[in-house]
Length: 320
Length: 207
Image (tube, rainbow over all chains, first blue to last red; front, top):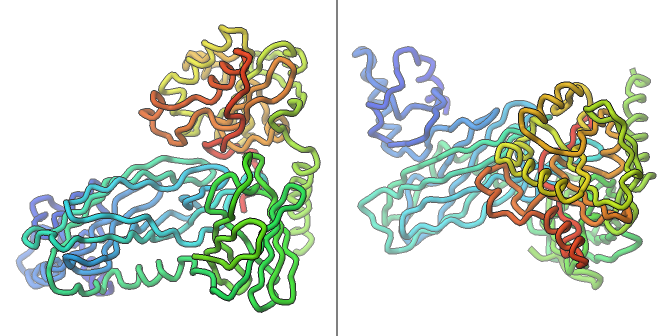
């Protein structure tokens, strides 16, 4: 990263050009120049060594340029340098947003909508469900949304079949529709692409995206420990979640995975208990049928964030 | 310094408690009464529309979800169809001054003219009073009230919570469905949905 930045410190000598598009063949429509080390044309002979260096970097190019979205950028990134036929691997949708702007969690809350992806994949590649990091509570006192500010990476688990052709690079394309909001909302659309070589040997991680994936995994809620006990009941228009987590908890927040189960804006009333807590969640006015279980992300005062799935009205163990 | 912090906290608390104290509109219950001034300068009282079906449409001209229904002509079509069948249709503008979607009466009249919109009236609600009364969360949130004055539908305009114009033709319109069913003497099948769209810009402090 530092090396790349250093190269771009010399940016006036490079010119963005389609003529130089051979190395990584990205087809993104808009390009952030600082990351555009794959598309340069040679302008000054004295700097041939620099070009050579850049070409070297391009030989294992798994990081495409970022594409502009309203008030931010979006980039399709790969964790590994190449795809290994017959193996699973990870891609990521990395969003960077201007200060104050946000995008939405899988359950957007009272307004907005989550990003949606349409994959265009070669035969033999399949994309799994997006993995959603723990969101934050956004909005106002009466309208509460769930989403992400600043930067977020949504990991996409991918599968490559064993018969995936080795000759051609795996061309991965995705059309992403995303709503970016601050006090106002702007819908955006980005066409992303990435070409990864396909090899039979086991894949090596890409140093350039390593930190992004480490941060993305750290931001994901973890499955709740199996020895934690939850109980879900109801009481006068509210769900009551009792948790036994082996220690007193003074602060907790629940983010429901499904829309229209709880009132997003209502205060979540917590009563600490010796080995956990009792959390009262006001039901949503839009909830018409009884629910069988409450699934979502529980954040605790210690900063931990856990996936819970609690069946209704009998003591159950949290399941992933 | 600490005193300065106290006031916003008190105001926030007040806002939280008022919205909780006066329980908002609920499907199956009487629609909360209101009087509001429209962009045509006249005053409209909900009580005067007893005996008629009433549709409330939350509006913000800068919201892309609202834009989908106006640019496609869907909202205007609905307004014309249902007012033509005796329904009173109120477009409600609950954006606070300085917020997206806040307009003056003449700006709203110009918008209605330009978009060839056909509501019974466009109610100006810059204090958010009517919005909070109905706990309107988004634009375009839709509410249908029956001739007896009860809320029979509260939620999204249709089943496609997107900003894409191409999603309009294939969508199931919940407002039309509720009106058709109720007018046909049937039970309204879908009475409550998540009202998709942009948050209503009440001008509250953000979190």
